[in-house]
Length: 215
Image (cartoon, rainbow, N blue to C red; front, side, top):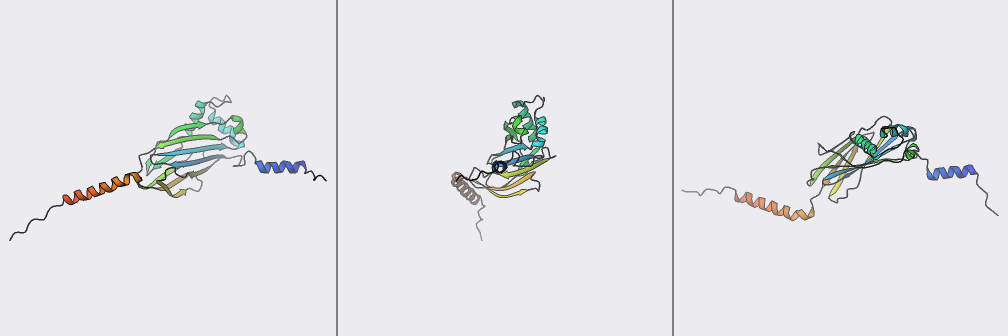
């Protein structure tokens, strides 16, 4: 006996639930801006993904396609990425860090109109080498706040010397402050001990000698 055939509508709904709608990641009227931060000893890397929902995709395309010819060139894509980065603030230990664009990927306009296209912006900021101890990175994104939602997270540091101690986000996730510590590089520890020993010996040798007591 053959098993009963499922109604066509049931199969369609099951497939839709399994695959997910094109805008399943966020609402169709939102511009999702998701940032991942990677902290290094001498740099901070940013991975920013910008995904417009279906109903706002045309607006976002208009911001990127400067000459409105329906095609986004590499120059237009990079220009938009730099504009976006001008709305981003980054500081390390309270000192502003200059952000440089590394790479931009702009999806096809058709993908964006379906709510599946993501603009990928990769950037980096070179910072002075972080000495062992406690440090802080602060990040904020104020790009196109109207209709945007934000996510921000820290990636696991690639350098084992860096340990993230705490993360503080604002309620809308416009910004993130990372508290982290940097451990001393094991290969420098012997030199550090030698330097401390030499400094101690030099301090002792420079101590004034007591004068001899004479009757």
